Amino acid sequence: MRIFDYIVVGAGSAGCALAARLAEDGTSRVLLLEAGIPDRKMWIHIPIGYGKTMFDPQVNWQFHSEPEPHLSGRRIYQPRGRTLGGSSSINGLVYIRGQAEDFDAWQALGNDGWGWRDILPYFKRSEGNERGESDYHGGHGPLRVSDIRGRHELVEAFIGGAAELGIPRTDDFNGARQEGAGYFQLTTHNGLRCSAAKAYLRPLRGRDNLAVETEAQATGIIFEGKRAVGVRYLRGDQPMEARVNREVILSAGAFQSPQLLLLSGIGDAEELGAKGIPVVHHRPEVGRNLQDHLQARLIYRCTRPITTNDDLRTLWGQAKIGMRWIVRKEGPVAAGIQLGGMFAKACPGVERPDIQFHFGTISADMTAGKPHDFSGFTMSVCQLRPTSRGAVTLRSSSPLDPPAFRFNYLATDEDRATMLAGVRLARRIAASRSLSPYIESEYRPGPGVASDDETLAFLRDYATTIFHPVGTCRMGADADAVVDPQLRVRGVTGLRVADASIMPLLLSGNTNAGAMVIGEKAADMIRADARADAADSASASLARSIVRSAPNADIGVAANS
Image (cartoon, rainbow, N blue to C red; front, side, top):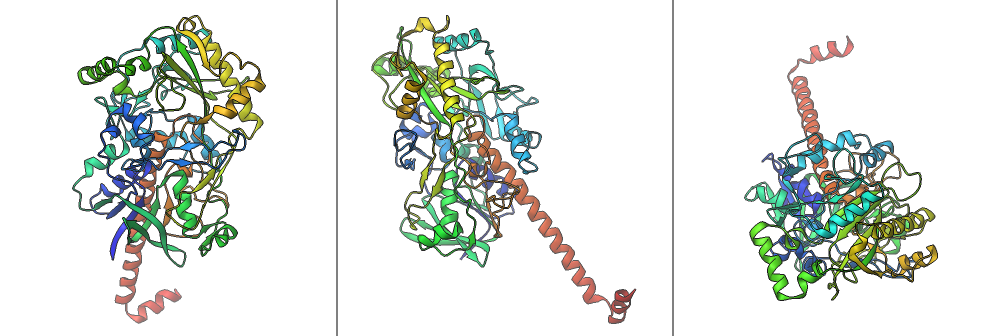
């Protein structure tokens, strides 16, 4: 039986950061389990390869939601990374932290230590921004963050259109103020993806105290009473077990961390009983509180052949963008799909941005789908803080079956109103003096969609995820929360969750950087607890030693003095 100090389940954004930080002292023995394959596929590392990995079952779980009642009963595709680096190896590479108010809202819910002032140092510690160290950025962290090289005529027109509406140009969505329009920074370095695996695991290759096992799918947590003592997993068809001296940490993501808790007997007792799963601890909130960003993709036919559609249409065009990447590390190959972005206030009276735009110089009928045969570009609109909530449940008691989940997108009046306001804002930008000369026509929703009712029907038929599921192992100080502010699973010992599933509220932006920071902070909390336990153990040992060496008479005098 192999015994480690810590077992981390899931080598995704949070898991890689967590395992690496736990192992970097050289003494803690850490096992990192990843169900997917090693991250050796070429398309993982080339930013434009996002379009390939989005549908590659070798590196992607390819989940689908249950039919969504407010999206015309459609099942929504949810890609999740199934390789070292997890979703950081297949995502759109956009580096966004969210708003300071997001983290302060977490703290206001009773999660001490999770406010913006507490979290900013972790963002800076993790970040190796090519712009260098500053009040808001780290320059020496493992996660490389880079500017998009070169400027694109269409993105400049989009930024100009936003300025006409009073939305300022910005060169930093992660600085003092998020609001504005500009170019994203990406998790890239020298034209290649910097995933969590590349950032955190590669520097520790060869360490004897860090074992990384791929194609190792966790099937359940081993308990002795209510203490987690190990993990069961499969390598191929071979059942395996590993044990811990200290803790098991789940970092399997917003779908699979709650799935593993449920499979292991932590969840709603009635639901577990219906699946024939013995109950370890009744915790009904496991899997609840599911949140995600819904996006509406407005697609336009461009008047000029300057889009990525045009670049990809011919072998000559593909060769040109390939050479731009090889020679200057710029262009679509180096930057992927989303070049420009915007954070803005769409609804009247809001105090901070409630809508995010992703602007792509490419168009397709679905995200990362086959580009249209016309010159096209896309404005994607998503609501930053949805109020609709869904849930993750078990499809069966088999750990090899995917989890069942439903988001309930657009279930609330607020969500419907905000998305409608976002679409109206996009159309105002499209009609601006800066951008309108580049628009031949609106391909989708199209000129026949004008009223709120027609636009809402468009959203129900076409809106989809922008791939930011969170919240299903909610952190909180209240008794119903799945984990406490130290990320310890309530009701049991030796078990934590550290990934995007612990977010009580969705961040105002892309979630990848936030997930890594959760891993960073979790490592500090775990190490602090280990030091405290060691100090307590040393004090207890010293006390026992003093008692054993003292004469009986002296003990009696001391006891009665």
